[in-house]
Length: 93
Image 1 (tube, one colour):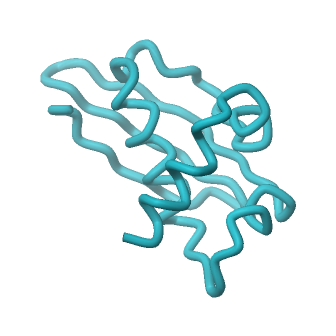
Image 2 (cartoon, rainbow, N blue to C red; image 1 turned 135 degrees about the vertical axis):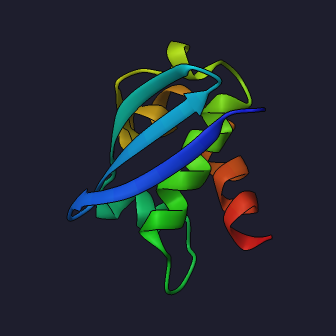
């Protein structure tokens, strides 16, 4: 992964990710719910880190310009069985 990722909080449980890869730049909106965060079972969870690691997880699988503009953690956790396990491992290591 050669992409550079910037995460900015835009609201409660909402972040913007800017992904830069060379001259290409994409922006993505990341949303999460308390339910999906509770499923991680991590005390004092940093939601900024959740957003960052979610984008990194997705970038390990596809390029920045292939990422969806809207990244909803609830939807992602329902459609990708490995996501929550991998996210928890990334956040606790």
